[in-house]
Image 1 (cartoon, one colour):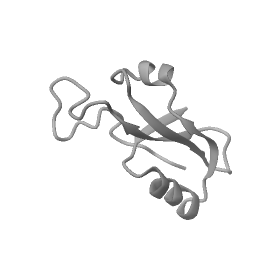
Image 2: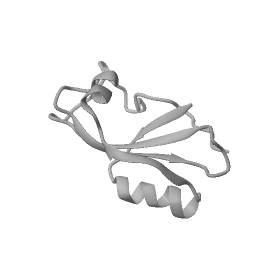
Image 3: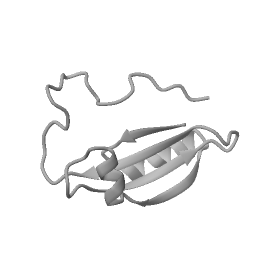
Length: 93
C-alpha cells in the first residue's frame, strides 16, 4: 500500500508533506541497487528517498524518490507527453 512518486526536489516536496499535510517521515535513505533494479531503472541509477505516512493511519504511504540517472531520456519505450510511467490518480485520506 505504497505509491512511488519521482520528484526533482526531494527536500521541497518532503516539506510540503510535513508542513502542509502534517505527514511524518517513516524512512529516509539512499536508493539501493536492488530497488533500482526492481523498478527496472538503468544500471548506475542513484537517488535519495523518503517514505512519508499520515500519523492518523498506519496504512498507505507515499515514497518520494529523487533520481540521478546515468543518462537522460525517456525511461519507457514509446513514451507520450502524458505518460508519467505510473498511476494516473492518487487519492489521499
